[in-house]
Amino acid sequence: MPGLPSDYTNDLGQPVGAPLGGWTGCAFPLAEPMAGRYCRLEPLDAGRHAADLWDAQQHDPDGRNWTYLPYGPFADQAAHRAWVEDSARMADPQFYAIIRTDTGQAVGAASYLRIVPEHGVIEVGHLNHTPLLQRTPASTEAMYLMMRRVFEEYGYRRYEWKCHAQNAPSWAAAERLGFTFEGVFRNAVVVKQRNRDTAWLSITDAEWPAIRAALEAWLAPENFEVSGQQREALSTFMARERGR
Image 1 (tube, rainbow, N blue to C red):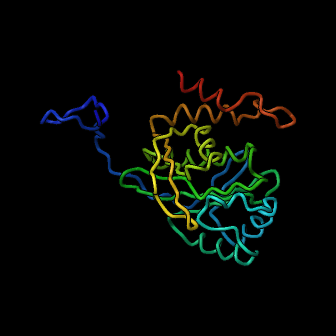
Image 2: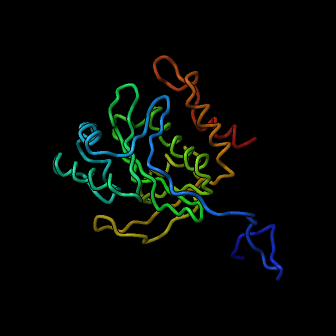
Image 3: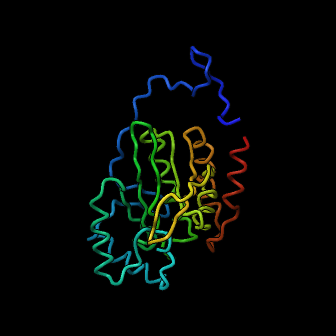
């Protein structure tokens, strides 16, 4: 029958959710830098990041990175910079540039969005990892740093990832990072004059400790050969930590 089972009931004998005691909500996250070993994230700023991001996006000449985003690709550098300027002014979405520490270049962008402090819910999105960031430790570390901030610094209960249901690489990336698939919202929105069915995935605060341990183990320097090749896949660490 419809409805999830529950270990809790109210005074009427109806199944209800677990009590949260003195829950008072979370603070809205401040736009502050995040630093890791392979990358750092800085609040998006056109003066510091627009030129680097434009240069990095030239490694994607077909504009594949923009297919599932509601904007882009941009006709020229001026149009791209205008988008960066507009995005940098927003509070929600709260945009960040992702900068590789080995080169010092901004090579991608990401944001927090749909931020609901009263319920402890926040989403990661507007992801644009250029070819200079894709399939690197910095790409994974950027997502780890954003997760760590919301769960550990701000005490959020739920971290969401939503993507176009036809965007197989994004969906796979979310599951690799520990997100759990929850379902598809059919006919959710219209993007670039096309229907978008939206896949929903999430991580909860209860799941975070195991996911954190797996991510940190994968990101550790000893997990990489001198060539940069990983010794063990993140999926191996995820299975190990989540099975404990």
